[in-house]
Image (cartoon, rainbow, N blue to C red):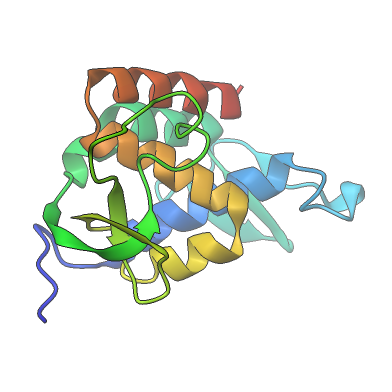
Length: 167
């Protein structure tokens, strides 16, 4: 079955996913066993991510603004037919706060998925596998997908939770 997307999978989507991963690993002690090598966030170059002197840098404020206000327009939500996959916009931490008893939840199509729901195409084809390996990334991308394709209540809650992650 052909993959139907409104935009081709490019390095721009990958860059956004990598930036989110870097942010969580930079500010989470569980990901950073070497506090002396803590990742710094500051404005660097136009790409917003740079590797220099064996340290990664992310423009935290720019990434936050893009996630909250711009990325949903750059990468609009695309829904498909019901399928098996990995839950996204209704995954933790939103799952505990929003009740959707009779609706099929949005899922990233994946053979490894354990839920049936409405296809919600991820930013990049490998997102479901990466998210299953990294719970923090999974939660961030699920919140981002709630911004991209959720109802007003889900979008507001997702924006609030993302703001807290970047505080």
